[in-house]
Image 1: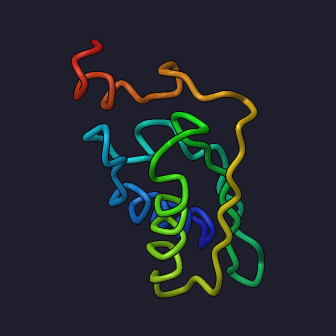
Image 2: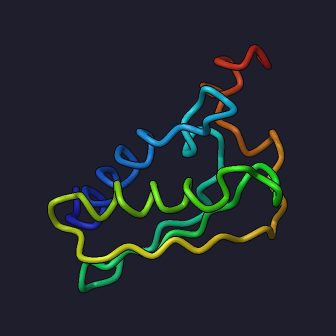
Image 3: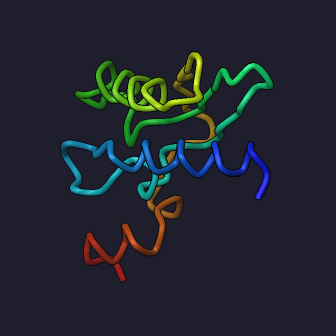
Length: 104
């Protein structure tokens, strides 16, 4: 496994520790993470969305993702960009999340 793949797996595991406070599922399984870009200098840029533009944790949730990723050993900086295109819907959720929420 390449170093970048290992780093990506570590980043995903860190992101999976961040739960949406309104839905008892982590933001990765909810499908809120659209892209993880690991730069050659070990900076990370994450594209994520929220379940709704009016999400009450619109400020704190991306900050929590950023902090968890920056706390990883080999990561320099992490920037989290909030996007609303494409619009999030339940089809982005993993089967694990759907099962957890009784949707399967």
